[in-house]
Image 1 (cartoon, rainbow, N blue to C red):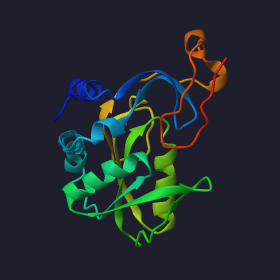
Image 2 (cartoon, rainbow, N blue to C red):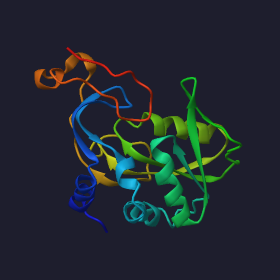
Image 3 (spheres, helix red, strand yellow):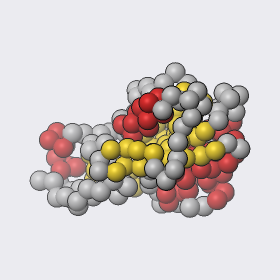
Length: 197
């Protein structure tokens, strides 16, 4: 099993653990950002980081792996490949998460939802609702980085490779040292570059 230290080292080696002032996809602000895409572009790391997730859920009779776009797509596809099950993703259209491109969940299908990084779990919860609305069963949730250090509980069967507490702040409650740095939005949701005073 890969350790927290090894995961962090991989992020540092690939330049994927960023420091500055970031607006997360949740809308919260943070001095740290995990840019999973920079890690997952390397096949050896993609395989290594997804293997523990796939192994954890191997005996849960998973039939489909579903992910929120954009961050979870690469992780979900690799976990699905390792588990040898169908993989699909949901994407945001006009602000609402939907299954498109002919993707669907069949009644009673057991679905594993996979994401790269979770802070509040908003995107994962949206995908969970889509699965349940289609009559599927959310059999588990897995992700690489849990920025809440385990505080965010999405379902009973939940697994993350790395748990750590990363400081996050509401936009109107920034510490002075963070407010002094221009905020950037490096994630997949569209947010204009902003200067926070």
